[in-house]
Length: 224
Length: 224
DNA sequence: ACCTGAACACCGTTCAAGT
DNA sequence: ACCTGAACACCGTTCAAGT
Picture 1: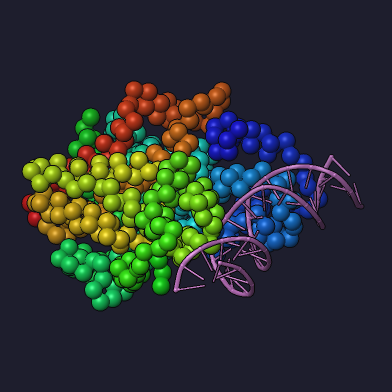
Picture 2 (picture 1 turned 180 degrees about the vertical axis):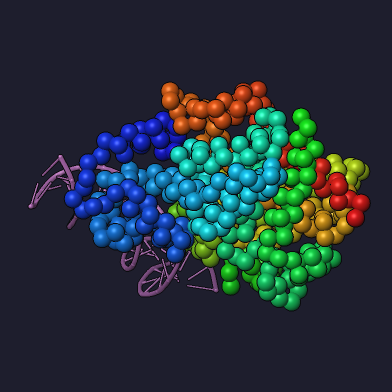
């Protein structure tokens, strides 16, 4: 069974309930927590079975008694991170709720930039992923959107947030060069426009702008 | 110098002009072309120096005479792929030009799904990346948007396209399970909504929807 | 029954030795 | 001057041997 698939998650949950206490006190949760600490500190490349084992005071072979492959570890890591998403306050007006959903998803991913590439490892079907999808979609429905619009809208919104975070957390200081040097590649009329706009733009100007565009468009469909 | 940075690209271009013909007939272009074939056929994980060398009939050490690291190879690979983006037809009306830009970027990435994670390796400053950024931004300016709006709009649009492609090409059949099985994680009221919408939705329904939302929002700023 | 050292088949990268 | 076999320091994963 493919780690991260619906049937895998089912089997995983059964496994968790069936387990007996171990001598070493090592649990899947502890392994995943330590993996996240490692990724946060040194990036996804630093997450190797051997290094993780060393941090936990065991050998790599021992880790395979808790996690059956690196892929499975990544799946658990992602859902662990998505668990940090907080649902929107119930009293918020509709549009503000949608804004909250977008910013919360973005905040959590930006706090753990190393895990971003791992989002591609498997579909987002873990308990925390489905919980936040439920909350997100509910927010859009409460904002007055008909179901068809809300579902497409939620998924498109997630796409936009992920794309923003993908570039923002790439670790090369953004898409524009900090130090272009003389005769740099972007040194022409178009780069003048890019530069002029960015010289005084806050870090999340593009994200806020894109989100506003999107919400304006959504607003037109709210009447449904 | 960091591969992919503006100063690196400058040095790279000089290096290309200064080079003399090699005995084996192996060039950087040939190495990058073969790398793309390999990634298209077997995914990014299959792209190793050793395997690439074998396909080119040499040893791994020899490849290091053309490309100084895997990171550099990825940077060249990305710009190679972005070179397949075709500029919008000059006669298209403004809004259609923007739609073209989004769909072209999406088309090219979907044709080479394996390279998507590598987009994070370095800023997009290669010759083909800057050329298509120039064309894209020009299209938004021609659609009647003031420069500030056009720049933010272009970057937000790229974010959205990348996010869509990121999930669509993940190789696990999308974000929703094909075979949920009995009692699957999403089997509740919200999943009913997701399912109902998706049962008859074409593959790119979410992308088209998000793009329309975004363009509607942009349209309101065109007067600026 | 649980654990794990040692091994297997791979990596990226380097460099001394060859032509 | 150009090339490259062999080595180094790593990987993920397995399994026989230990407790």
